[in-house]
Length: 328
Image 1: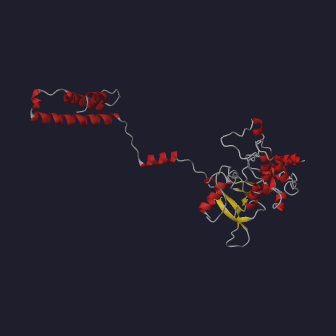
Image 2 (image 1 turned 120 degrees about the vertical axis):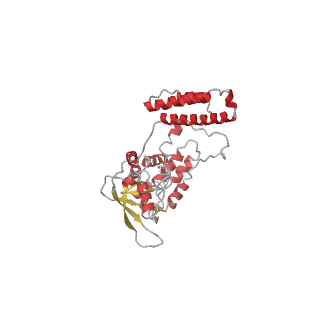
Image 3 (image 1 turned 180 degrees about the vertical axis):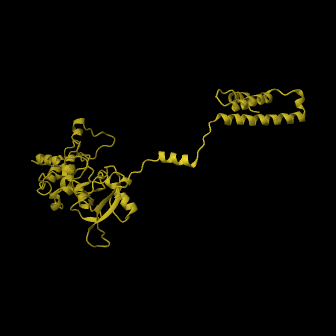
Protein backbone atom coordinates (compact mmCIF):
# COMPACT_ATOMS: atom_id res chain seq x y z
CA UNK A 1 0.00 0.00 0.00
CA UNK A 2 1.02 3.66 -0.10
CA UNK A 3 3.47 4.88 2.57
CA UNK A 4 1.98 6.09 5.82
CA UNK A 5 3.33 9.63 5.51
CA UNK A 6 1.63 9.97 2.11
CA UNK A 7 -1.70 8.91 3.55
CA UNK A 8 -1.33 11.26 6.46
CA UNK A 9 -0.52 14.23 4.16
CA UNK A 10 -3.46 13.47 1.93
CA UNK A 11 -6.02 12.74 4.63
CA UNK A 12 -5.05 15.23 7.35
CA UNK A 13 -5.40 18.35 5.20
CA UNK A 14 -7.21 21.32 6.71
CA UNK A 15 -9.33 22.15 3.68
CA UNK A 16 -12.86 23.15 4.48
CA UNK A 17 -15.42 21.06 2.60
CA UNK A 18 -19.04 20.00 2.50
CA UNK A 19 -20.55 17.35 4.88
CA UNK A 20 -20.42 14.81 2.08
CA UNK A 21 -16.73 15.42 1.68
CA UNK A 22 -16.22 15.04 5.45
CA UNK A 23 -17.99 11.65 5.41
CA UNK A 24 -15.83 10.44 2.52
CA UNK A 25 -12.71 11.62 4.32
CA UNK A 26 -13.64 9.78 7.54
CA UNK A 27 -14.37 6.63 5.58
CA UNK A 28 -11.05 6.86 3.76
CA UNK A 29 -9.20 7.37 7.07
CA UNK A 30 -10.86 4.29 8.57
CA UNK A 31 -9.99 2.13 5.58
CA UNK A 32 -6.44 3.45 5.50
CA UNK A 33 -5.96 2.63 9.19
CA UNK A 34 -7.30 -0.86 8.55
CA UNK A 35 -4.89 -1.36 5.66
CA UNK A 36 -1.78 0.03 7.34
CA UNK A 37 -2.32 -1.87 10.64
CA UNK A 38 -0.26 -5.06 10.93
CA UNK A 39 -2.46 -8.01 9.86
CA UNK A 40 -3.30 -10.65 12.45
CA UNK A 41 -1.65 -14.00 12.37
CA UNK A 42 -4.60 -15.65 10.63
CA UNK A 43 -4.16 -13.16 7.77
CA UNK A 44 -1.11 -15.11 6.74
CA UNK A 45 -3.48 -17.72 5.41
CA UNK A 46 -3.94 -17.41 1.59
CA UNK A 47 -7.64 -16.71 1.94
CA UNK A 48 -7.12 -13.98 4.47
CA UNK A 49 -4.29 -12.59 2.35
CA UNK A 50 -6.62 -12.24 -0.65
CA UNK A 51 -9.21 -10.44 1.49
CA UNK A 52 -6.47 -8.09 2.74
CA UNK A 53 -5.43 -7.18 -0.83
CA UNK A 54 -9.05 -6.41 -1.73
CA UNK A 55 -9.32 -4.09 1.26
CA UNK A 56 -6.10 -2.37 0.29
CA UNK A 57 -7.36 -1.69 -3.26
CA UNK A 58 -10.58 -0.30 -1.84
CA UNK A 59 -8.60 2.04 0.41
CA UNK A 60 -6.63 3.22 -2.61
CA UNK A 61 -9.82 4.07 -4.48
CA UNK A 62 -11.13 5.97 -1.48
CA UNK A 63 -7.88 7.91 -1.29
CA UNK A 64 -8.21 8.81 -4.96
CA UNK A 65 -11.73 10.10 -4.35
CA UNK A 66 -10.49 12.17 -1.43
CA UNK A 67 -7.73 13.70 -3.56
CA UNK A 68 -10.13 14.54 -6.40
CA UNK A 69 -12.47 16.18 -3.91
CA UNK A 70 -9.64 18.38 -2.63
CA UNK A 71 -8.79 19.72 -6.12
CA UNK A 72 -10.92 22.61 -7.43
CA UNK A 73 -13.12 21.74 -10.38
CA UNK A 74 -12.88 23.91 -13.48
CA UNK A 75 -15.77 23.65 -15.89
CA UNK A 76 -15.34 25.22 -19.34
CA UNK A 77 -17.82 25.43 -22.16
CA UNK A 78 -17.46 26.60 -25.72
CA UNK A 79 -19.12 29.90 -24.79
CA UNK A 80 -16.69 30.62 -21.97
CA UNK A 81 -13.71 29.62 -24.12
CA UNK A 82 -14.86 31.98 -26.88
CA UNK A 83 -15.31 34.83 -24.42
CA UNK A 84 -11.85 34.24 -22.95
CA UNK A 85 -10.25 34.20 -26.40
CA UNK A 86 -12.02 37.41 -27.36
CA UNK A 87 -10.85 39.11 -24.16
CA UNK A 88 -7.26 37.97 -24.68
CA UNK A 89 -7.06 38.95 -28.36
CA UNK A 90 -5.96 42.56 -29.01
CA UNK A 91 -8.54 44.86 -30.43
CA UNK A 92 -8.20 44.94 -34.21
CA UNK A 93 -7.56 48.40 -35.61
CA UNK A 94 -9.76 49.55 -38.46
CA UNK A 95 -8.18 49.45 -41.90
CA UNK A 96 -6.22 52.56 -42.87
CA UNK A 97 -5.83 52.32 -46.63
CA UNK A 98 -3.21 54.68 -48.05
CA UNK A 99 -1.90 55.18 -51.54
CA UNK A 100 1.79 54.59 -52.33
CA UNK A 101 3.08 55.85 -55.68
CA UNK A 102 6.33 54.06 -56.52
CA UNK A 103 8.73 54.76 -59.37
CA UNK A 104 8.89 51.77 -61.74
CA UNK A 105 11.22 51.02 -64.63
CA UNK A 106 12.27 47.63 -65.96
CA UNK A 107 15.27 47.54 -68.34
CA UNK A 108 14.18 44.14 -69.68
CA UNK A 109 10.80 45.33 -70.93
CA UNK A 110 11.90 48.87 -71.77
CA UNK A 111 9.39 51.68 -72.06
CA UNK A 112 9.22 54.95 -70.22
CA UNK A 113 9.52 55.14 -66.42
CA UNK A 114 6.22 55.52 -64.60
CA UNK A 115 4.72 55.81 -61.14
CA UNK A 116 2.61 52.82 -60.13
CA UNK A 117 -0.01 53.17 -57.40
CA UNK A 118 -0.56 50.65 -54.61
CA UNK A 119 -3.17 50.63 -51.84
CA UNK A 120 -1.74 49.51 -48.49
CA UNK A 121 -3.40 49.07 -45.10
CA UNK A 122 -0.80 50.86 -42.99
CA UNK A 123 -2.40 49.59 -39.76
CA UNK A 124 -1.51 46.04 -40.83
CA UNK A 125 2.21 46.63 -41.40
CA UNK A 126 5.17 48.13 -39.59
CA UNK A 127 5.61 51.87 -39.00
CA UNK A 128 8.40 52.52 -41.51
CA UNK A 129 8.39 53.05 -45.27
CA UNK A 130 10.53 49.94 -45.68
CA UNK A 131 7.77 47.90 -44.00
CA UNK A 132 5.28 49.19 -46.55
CA UNK A 133 7.63 48.23 -49.38
CA UNK A 134 7.96 44.73 -47.94
CA UNK A 135 4.18 44.43 -47.70
CA UNK A 136 3.72 45.53 -51.31
CA UNK A 137 6.41 43.15 -52.56
CA UNK A 138 5.11 40.20 -50.50
CA UNK A 139 1.39 40.62 -51.11
CA UNK A 140 0.83 42.63 -54.29
CA UNK A 141 3.79 42.81 -56.67
CA UNK A 142 6.87 40.64 -56.21
CA UNK A 143 8.58 42.28 -59.21
CA UNK A 144 9.21 45.47 -57.20
CA UNK A 145 12.96 46.00 -56.72
CA UNK A 146 14.72 47.93 -53.96
CA UNK A 147 17.83 47.55 -51.83
CA UNK A 148 17.73 46.78 -48.11
CA UNK A 149 19.86 45.00 -45.56
CA UNK A 150 20.09 45.97 -41.89
CA UNK A 151 16.73 47.76 -41.35
CA UNK A 152 18.44 49.76 -38.58
CA UNK A 153 19.94 52.79 -40.36
CA UNK A 154 23.43 51.29 -40.36
CA UNK A 155 24.12 49.94 -43.85
CA UNK A 156 22.64 52.75 -45.98
CA UNK A 157 21.31 50.30 -48.58
CA UNK A 158 17.69 51.54 -48.61
CA UNK A 159 18.50 55.17 -49.48
CA UNK A 160 15.84 56.66 -51.75
CA UNK A 161 13.78 59.79 -52.30
CA UNK A 162 10.63 59.70 -50.16
CA UNK A 163 8.09 62.49 -50.56
CA UNK A 164 10.75 64.71 -52.12
CA UNK A 165 13.46 64.15 -49.48
CA UNK A 166 16.48 61.87 -49.69
CA UNK A 167 16.46 59.55 -46.69
CA UNK A 168 16.57 55.92 -45.58
CA UNK A 169 13.37 53.92 -45.96
CA UNK A 170 14.08 52.05 -42.72
CA UNK A 171 14.21 55.32 -40.75
CA UNK A 172 11.37 57.16 -42.51
CA UNK A 173 8.02 56.79 -40.73
CA UNK A 174 4.77 56.39 -42.61
CA UNK A 175 2.52 59.43 -42.26
CA UNK A 176 -0.57 57.43 -41.32
CA UNK A 177 -2.75 60.51 -40.77
CA UNK A 178 -1.98 61.98 -44.19
CA UNK A 179 -4.52 61.63 -46.99
CA UNK A 180 -1.97 62.54 -49.67
CA UNK A 181 -0.27 59.70 -51.58
CA UNK A 182 3.19 58.64 -50.39
CA UNK A 183 5.69 59.06 -53.23
CA UNK A 184 8.84 56.93 -53.45
CA UNK A 185 11.53 57.41 -56.11
CA UNK A 186 15.20 56.45 -56.56
CA UNK A 187 17.97 58.83 -55.54
CA UNK A 188 17.86 61.81 -57.93
CA UNK A 189 20.29 62.27 -60.83
CA UNK A 190 21.64 58.74 -60.59
CA UNK A 191 21.51 56.08 -63.29
CA UNK A 192 18.62 53.73 -62.47
CA UNK A 193 19.31 50.01 -62.62
CA UNK A 194 15.71 49.01 -61.94
CA UNK A 195 12.81 50.57 -60.01
CA UNK A 196 14.31 52.04 -56.79
CA UNK A 197 17.81 50.60 -57.37
CA UNK A 198 20.48 53.03 -58.63
CA UNK A 199 24.00 52.52 -59.94
CA UNK A 200 26.49 53.40 -57.17
CA UNK A 201 29.65 52.51 -59.13
CA UNK A 202 30.77 56.11 -59.70
CA UNK A 203 30.10 57.04 -56.06
CA UNK A 204 32.21 54.14 -54.75
CA UNK A 205 34.99 54.86 -57.26
CA UNK A 206 35.22 58.41 -55.95
CA UNK A 207 35.36 57.09 -52.39
CA UNK A 208 38.17 54.72 -53.37
CA UNK A 209 40.14 57.60 -54.93
CA UNK A 210 40.69 59.32 -51.56
CA UNK A 211 42.40 56.17 -50.18
CA UNK A 212 40.26 55.83 -47.03
CA UNK A 213 42.74 53.99 -44.82
CA UNK A 214 45.69 54.79 -42.58
CA UNK A 215 49.03 55.36 -44.30
CA UNK A 216 52.48 55.69 -42.71
CA UNK A 217 55.81 56.67 -44.27
CA UNK A 218 58.14 54.43 -42.29
CA UNK A 219 56.91 51.14 -43.67
CA UNK A 220 54.10 48.91 -42.50
CA UNK A 221 52.68 49.22 -39.04
CA UNK A 222 54.21 46.72 -36.66
CA UNK A 223 51.83 43.96 -35.75
CA UNK A 224 50.93 43.85 -32.08
CA UNK A 225 52.14 47.41 -31.45
CA UNK A 226 49.54 50.05 -30.61
CA UNK A 227 49.28 53.01 -32.97
CA UNK A 228 48.49 55.40 -30.14
CA UNK A 229 45.94 58.20 -30.40
CA UNK A 230 45.02 60.35 -27.40
CA UNK A 231 41.45 61.21 -26.45
CA UNK A 232 41.62 64.76 -27.79
CA UNK A 233 42.65 63.65 -31.28
CA UNK A 234 40.16 60.83 -31.21
CA UNK A 235 37.33 63.28 -30.38
CA UNK A 236 38.09 65.19 -33.61
CA UNK A 237 36.77 62.22 -35.60
CA UNK A 238 33.32 62.35 -34.00
CA UNK A 239 30.70 63.40 -36.52
CA UNK A 240 32.83 62.08 -39.39
CA UNK A 241 33.39 58.35 -38.96
CA UNK A 242 29.65 57.70 -38.51
CA UNK A 243 29.01 58.23 -42.24
CA UNK A 244 27.40 55.11 -43.74
CA UNK A 245 27.96 56.12 -47.42
CA UNK A 246 24.26 56.07 -48.28
CA UNK A 247 24.79 58.93 -50.80
CA UNK A 248 21.73 60.85 -49.57
CA UNK A 249 23.82 64.00 -49.18
CA UNK A 250 25.67 63.77 -52.48
CA UNK A 251 22.52 63.13 -54.52
CA UNK A 252 20.79 66.13 -52.90
CA UNK A 253 23.57 68.52 -54.01
CA UNK A 254 22.90 70.43 -57.27
CA UNK A 255 26.64 70.75 -57.88
CA UNK A 256 26.94 66.97 -57.77
CA UNK A 257 23.98 66.59 -60.13
CA UNK A 258 25.74 68.49 -62.92
CA UNK A 259 29.36 67.54 -62.23
CA UNK A 260 29.27 64.08 -60.66
CA UNK A 261 32.02 62.90 -62.99
CA UNK A 262 34.53 65.39 -61.50
CA UNK A 263 33.15 66.83 -58.26
CA UNK A 264 33.73 64.41 -55.38
CA UNK A 265 30.56 65.38 -53.57
CA UNK A 266 29.76 65.95 -49.87
CA UNK A 267 30.04 62.35 -48.65
CA UNK A 268 33.45 61.67 -50.20
CA UNK A 269 34.90 65.05 -49.21
CA UNK A 270 33.77 64.55 -45.62
CA UNK A 271 35.53 61.19 -45.55
CA UNK A 272 38.62 62.76 -47.07
CA UNK A 273 38.62 65.28 -44.21
CA UNK A 274 38.21 62.43 -41.71
CA UNK A 275 41.55 60.90 -42.87
CA UNK A 276 43.27 64.27 -43.29
CA UNK A 277 42.84 65.14 -39.59
CA UNK A 278 43.52 61.65 -38.24
CA UNK A 279 46.61 62.05 -36.02
CA UNK A 280 47.79 58.51 -36.82
CA UNK A 281 48.01 59.17 -40.57
CA UNK A 282 51.30 60.51 -42.00
CA UNK A 283 50.10 61.54 -45.47
CA UNK A 284 48.19 64.69 -44.55
CA UNK A 285 49.95 66.96 -47.07
CA UNK A 286 49.58 64.44 -49.88
CA UNK A 287 45.85 64.06 -49.15
CA UNK A 288 45.32 67.82 -49.20
CA UNK A 289 47.18 68.14 -52.48
CA UNK A 290 45.05 65.39 -54.01
CA UNK A 291 41.73 67.14 -53.27
CA UNK A 292 42.99 70.66 -54.03
CA UNK A 293 41.29 70.94 -57.39
CA UNK A 294 38.82 73.40 -58.89
CA UNK A 295 36.38 70.61 -59.73
CA UNK A 296 37.02 68.04 -56.97
CA UNK A 297 36.66 70.50 -54.08
CA UNK A 298 35.57 73.96 -55.15
CA UNK A 299 32.36 72.94 -56.92
CA UNK A 300 30.83 73.13 -53.42
CA UNK A 301 28.89 76.40 -53.14
CA UNK A 302 27.64 75.83 -49.58
CA UNK A 303 24.04 75.19 -50.57
CA UNK A 304 23.69 73.11 -47.36
CA UNK A 305 21.30 70.52 -48.82
CA UNK A 306 23.74 67.83 -47.74
CA UNK A 307 23.55 68.75 -44.06
CA UNK A 308 19.76 68.99 -44.14
CA UNK A 309 19.08 65.51 -45.50
CA UNK A 310 21.78 63.42 -43.78
CA UNK A 311 19.89 60.60 -42.01
CA UNK A 312 22.67 60.31 -39.42
CA UNK A 313 22.58 64.00 -38.50
CA UNK A 314 26.11 64.74 -39.77
CA UNK A 315 27.35 68.01 -41.28
CA UNK A 316 29.25 67.44 -44.56
CA UNK A 317 29.17 71.16 -45.45
CA UNK A 318 31.20 71.99 -42.34
CA UNK A 319 33.78 69.33 -43.16
CA UNK A 320 34.16 70.68 -46.70
CA UNK A 321 34.66 74.20 -45.33
CA UNK A 322 37.40 72.86 -43.02
CA UNK A 323 39.18 71.24 -45.95
CA UNK A 324 39.12 74.53 -47.87
CA UNK A 325 40.73 76.38 -44.96
CA UNK A 326 43.46 73.71 -44.63
CA UNK A 327 44.30 73.89 -48.33
CA UNK A 328 45.00 77.61 -48.05
